[in-house]
Amino acid sequence: MKFYNSVGPNPRMVRMFMAEKGITVPTEEVNLMKGDNRREPYLSKNSIGQMPALELDGGHCVTEITAICEYLEDTHPNPPLIGDSPEKKAETRKWTRRIDLNICEPMAAGFRYSQGLPLFKDRIPTIPEAADGLKGVAQHYLKWLDKEMDGKEFVCGKRFTMADILLFAFLDFGNTVGQPLNPELKNVSAWFARVKERPSAKA
Image (cartoon, rainbow, N blue to C red):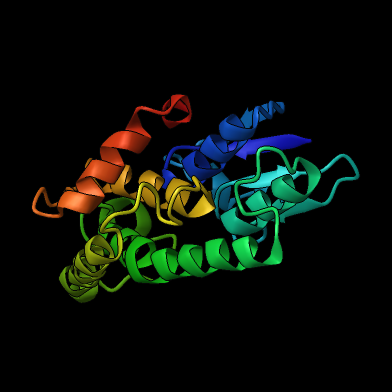
């Protein structure tokens, strides 16, 4: 296998996932800042030009971060980060989707359409006038999540899962691009501090 890595929260999520499982694979750095992900030879690996990608030994490339993590879970089931039963897997996938759609995606788009606009305006469709609203959507759902996290150690209770890794990668990114974690969100802030202490957080 080969992992195509770059800056940003998406590759970091997969790196954390691999670190939690003790998976080490050869890595090739793709310079996103220079736009190398938007031209060959990377486009032959991932035609949409997004990072990261995991190239399998047979040449097939797995793309999209949750799909990459699902593949790694299937091939390296221990420790389970999605689940070791249908019920646990469903719970993890539910929370991963909720977090991705309602927090991570609007947060990332809000960045691309504002602070990140000089980098992204000639690469993808951008909507600068939507930036503040999208950032507001992410904050709205973080407040909702704060209530959901009451009394929980991790997003899925006592289990540390893919949902936690996804959320941490994006919230830590938000802290660096003008979307800091609101300290009034006590449950999420305490959760963030716990995850930050894990060795995988340095991945």
